[in-house]
Image (cartoon, rainbow, N blue to C red; front, side):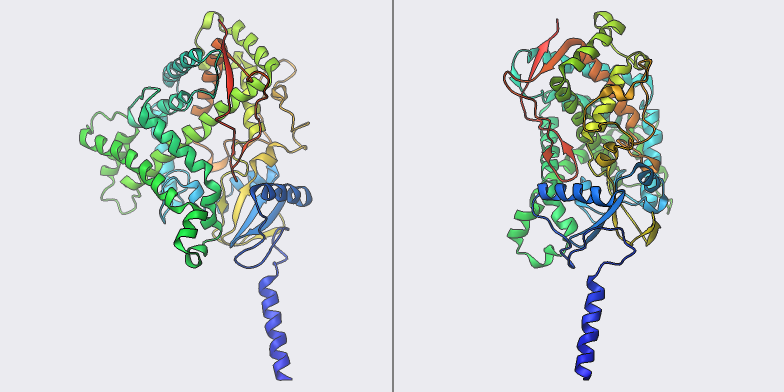
Length: 491
């Protein structure tokens, strides 16, 4: 009899360990260590759609050993993004440029380290020109040089010129490191290639993020094959060595009385704080900040401009409409400035709709919880990974009519003026972790778009359609960058 009682108690204990707590948000639970695991990226995305339709506005998913929470409603996402309890980032390799136990830089650091580097970066980037008109001439120069490259490609079916990435990087790099690279600079092309390889292998990198126990049970060769661990380490090491070289050059030529750029400003402030026990400044922290800013240029602004080219080729009537307005406001190829933004509302509406429709960060950058939190009638457990789902918020039918249709006019009022979305739009995040480069990114996209449309037009290759589906990367909606496009000079 006693044995039966023990067996019953054991079954009861196992049952309680295996079952999902009722106060957690609804969604699949699966089994310990594995969770609920669909096979293939397509199956993952399809399952997410099903769960969003069934459990809107919030649902969960135990994936591997991590408990994921997805927020699909703008008001709830706004509450999360503005709540200090959800401010931390998880230590995931797919959102870190450098390998390591501690999150560094602007995007992934937490606590005092994050607070200090964000405040320092925001202050000094503004001082160096971000958000001010003096950066406009730099953007104009890079846009004009890119257009000259595009004109040379006129009439030839080929991918978007790789110089687009270099042009975007140059703008930020002049502010950060006081350098401008030639658009065909081999070092920047190599770095761009490394960053693209990093993005294309995000799904592999996530294996160890969500299934950390594989490090202890899989043979080394199989682990490297599945998780691309060696590839990740080699890539990050190459990127790190490039940035270290720039820092070392700045240290060797530093003049404390005449700071040239962001790196100089950081080194000077780091020296001032060297005896402060609360200082979090270090060369490693500087490396992380540089990497984050560089990644922002390549992985956001550059990709958004690539999306722009593909949308223009896909929708020729919209392209013609934009060019007509640009030609009327800026005759004879007059260079665009910030003052022209209010006079070119169709351009503003166009790239805002691109940000919404393409939704580059499908699930947004993740947050994590340092303790159990009561939220939206549920309990979000300590260590949960919380995703403010950018794409589902941007496609919410309560906010947008026919959200699946690409329609820039949704951001124009009855008088044709641009209406900046106040709800249902989180392309740059919000709250204290809102993208600090938003104003710079908007300036770049505006000036590049206008300059390109003044001089060239974009078309599908003969007898082909533009590929508008994104590459199957788990968390980012990356276009088919290598697809061919036809550029034609307008004059």
